[in-house]
Amino acid sequence: MPGTEKVDPTSVPRAFDEHARSYDKLVGSNPGYHEHLRLSARRMGLGRGAGLRLLDLGCGTGASTAALLDAAPGAQVTAVDASAEMLAQARRKNWPPGVRFVHSRLEDLDRVGVTGPFDGILAAYLVRNLRDRDAGLARMYDLLAPGAPLAVHEYSVRDSFRSRLKWNLVCGMVIIPLGTLRTGSSDLYRYLRRSVLAFDGVETFTGRMSTAGFEDIRVQTMDGWQTHVVHTFLGRRPGPPADDPLLDPEVAEIETPPEGVPAV
Ligand SMILES: C[S@@+](CC[C@H](N)C(=O)[O-])C[C@H]1O[C@@H](n2cnc3c(N)ncnc32)[C@H](O)[C@@H]1O
Image (cartoon, rainbow, N blue to C red):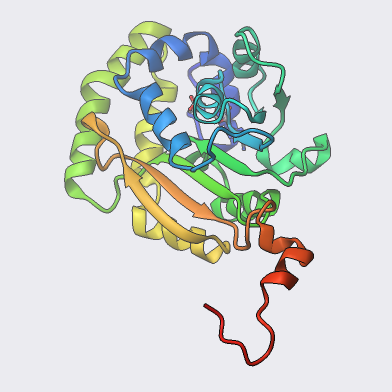
């Protein structure tokens, strides 16, 4: 019977299939949800995005896709999700021609021909749900162009007693009762509470990013009740961005001072 099974990382996309139709209403009643996604997308520093190819991993019903387009309206966005029903909700919305939706797990992107390189990746509320976070981060690294940014937008409360307390209160008093009332099932909301409590603290997760090879790692939080509960984890694949003039051998040659001449 749908909705009675205990959700775990292997059944997350299926659970989202069952909750897809109520997802937008629920997140819409969470103050700051959309603004915080936009903030994480802006923190990627993509400029207006003209000519950029971006990847929205775990795009769901398209809230994070819209946030990427808000930050970088000129970009082309590939938006990927493992839940067919969440994608069906996303596809019903109006999108500019540069947006395409792909039904796939992150782990299977090769098989559906999504190979990159991308000029930026946003993964909003995805990483906590992956069976193997290190393998997921390694996959994201491979999908990025040299110098391109990754933004992981995610709950992380493990390092702070106050954050855990706040999260338990918000779940117990708002998210679980409201979600159950709206959908008739509490499974996904109980999983949300559990999975956030079990997820890495900020230090552990930034350590994972570093081990995966990311550099310039920074963490910024949000405002409202999400302060020190929701974070943008930013990192960059090493190497200059593809349009860096220093990558052009002719420019590099001109800028190299002759031997014996000190560089200014
Ligand atoms: C909480 S929703 C977030 C949706 C959207 N990013 C947002 O911010 O509103 C997480 C999404 O990740 C998807 N997902 C979970 N595991 C996945 C995986 N391994 N590969 C791709 N998508 C996955 C789920 O189907 C779900 O739609």
